[in-house]
Image 1 (spheres, rainbow, N blue to C red):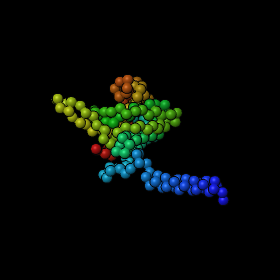
Image 2 (image 1 turned 45 degrees about the vertical axis):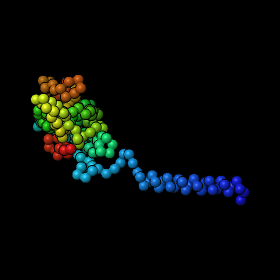
Image 3 (image 1 turned 60 degrees about the vertical axis):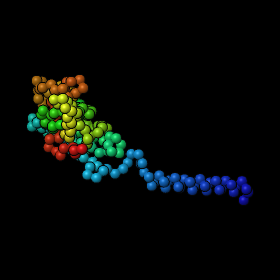
Image 4 (image 1 turned 120 degrees about the vertical axis):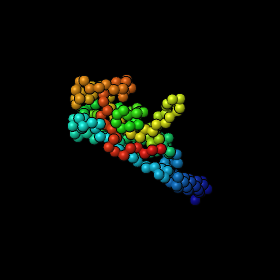
Length: 198
């Protein structure tokens, strides 16, 4: 074997050994920055089944299902992952999603977190990244700062006419959209376990 061939063989062997060592290190330390165990006492995943907010709406949307899955990853990534999926919804309809203090009226403090829109078949799907498990509102009451936890979920018809198919053209206009005009609350978490407290 020539000296040149010998040196090439040694270099290849060293490279392979370094690659194996690097692979072993990567395998031993997966996702150093974005994976980890959820602290004890907090569920990793929370699931909520939202139901129509009134008997009248339930009768108009008998097949409606709105499921929310929240991956509690704030301690690891700085945000939670809120996934909403709907079936049997009125077609081509946008809903505004909120974290709220109380599932039903008068709702209390509320945080607008995003929209989801049904397609021609009444199916909807969207994902939001935000802090969910520790969400709260802070305001002044009689000069004192007060914290209110937002452990419930609500969804409103984004368009004031979005609920007309069920409630008629004279249904109330509510402020639950960015333009301050929405329909009534369509779904809420009143009949499911609320989001975990901080």
